Image (cartoon, rainbow over the protein chains, first blue to last red):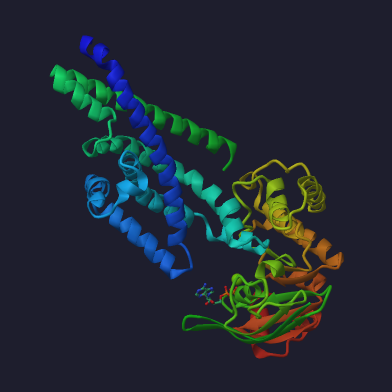
Length: 222
Length: 240
Ligand SMILES: Nc1ncnc2c1ncn2[C@@H]1O[C@H](COP(=O)(O)OP(=O)(O)O)[C@@H](O)[C@H]1O
Ligand SMILES: [Mg+2]
């Protein structure tokens, strides 16, 4: 208890970074997922291929390897540090890689959600002269979104957990700070236990909030 | 109002429409009958571009649908459609179902769209259901909302694809009443239906389709009483 209390400021700084990366990644993963899902369903073949390649590449390689490759590997052949700044490149690259990885899974969630909406809805929208964009925006996506909430929340929880993989590429988030604290205190059991509890509290509240949200939506509308 | 010349439609190897020629006058109510699979729905869906004609020419509401230059969404503003399965927007209230297209497509002001929607709901006998969701309505009520939704675009033509086939028997008459009122108002209508009473009473002309072709057409009473073609006779003897 004493150990935790003494090192709490350090750990909280790490936690703050964990939360920040998670929020950015969750927002971006939905954005990337939406774009890639729409591309996968596009009439234009090139869009479909690009999106399919994106999804397959990111789902078929480990996130940790992706992070090493993009955060640490790319600077060896490209002057990315000069482009983005020595300080900024690893931060941006880490956040972007994490988001792209999660976005690949979200792509499939959103695609399945869109395909799950009855074909008659799109036909009805077309019959009242909506453009493809309008029927997607006002008819299909709102209906698809409701059934996407549970899998999207799962993915958000996964994203929060996956931020821990940012430690090996030098992001000073919760796990990274934990390692530092343990290096000086040797309180391995206490600190890892505490860190696990922190993750649990965050992810558990996210899931609870999501099921509340889902119930609300279910009550409001069908 | 509608002019179809030598319309062909194939799905892969399957030829569903084999050269359909049809003409519908303004204010005319044309009823299309025929056995299941004869291409009635496909024909109707070609008329508002839900299916793309393989060949042939379709003019509707003053525009040439088969001309690649034609803006299909512009054309669809003039052609309303009512589906067998209603296809109301599940996530929207009844009022929103009717106002969304006028607002988003035609940029009608919200208050104006709502007022029109209320009038249309009154016309189909559903005042008071504005804030319900489609699932809270019976099939017959949903179908009448679907009619109101199509009418909100102020179309020149209305297409009906078996509008009462998915309904419980006691729900059918309400929908047919709404359609009849529409016909009496002078709406140009093409109606695919098995309701022979409606065809006889409201239809100006009856088209019998079989095997992707129009086999026979004429005044409903004439066809019912004295069908000229063997296939028409067989079909009518089966359903009447
Ligand atoms: N999208 C489609 N793809 C393949 N075949 C279709 C499609 N739509 C209709 N068909 C076929 O076309 C034929 C005519 O169908 P349809 O126009 O629905 O007939 P009807 O409405 O007279 O019952 C049927 O054999 C049906 O299976
Ligand atoms: Mg049909």
